Length: 291
Image (cartoon, rainbow, N blue to C red):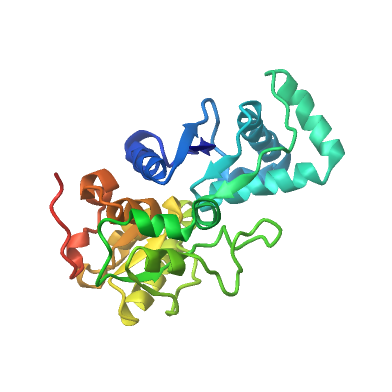
């Protein structure tokens, strides 16, 4: 069985710890052991990056060094965490002086950034390392009749030097949804509009205007649900959309590992589908009750 280090960031802790439980079960079924990396810290998101890049590089060089110490690559299941970690790796791999300075700090903890760990985002890891054919073979509950709008989010498309999908024509989610038996809807108004998650903390009004754009466009295009590979985009579309739209206009959002778990046969509660604020009962496809 393959083994990869898992960086949990903030989204997979506390009340959202079920997200890691879901992901770990799914990956085990797909022949991959997720090793939760202990003592890692928050990546800092975009917030610290804007104020102190050196601090962000130090924090995330440490996170990467923890994986390297165990001889593992790093799997990241959050767009923002992926972007920040990948930007750190890119900076340190291309600036020996910066790497040396930060390694002096890491040495105090017995760590060293070597640049040996590859940083994987969830989506390309599923496509390239697990493979579509293996995923197809594991499907026990095909998503027949599901019309699913794919929503990539911003931080796997930018900046170009660390992006895992093309910013103008992102691909991958559609292939994955098709493999699970669903009908992907890629082109709809608002598909490239930011979910507004980060904006909420500084400008609630702007955030709530942004978050409804993709659901509204998806609904017009015939989709009944959105799927995203980012837990922050999911949270925005589940929590902020609930605040911003009338009930009849709301479109449920599903985090990629959840719909993957459901298609692989997991009970809706095990898959995480019962924790949503905007219920999946809004869609026409019958979902069996949670056990």
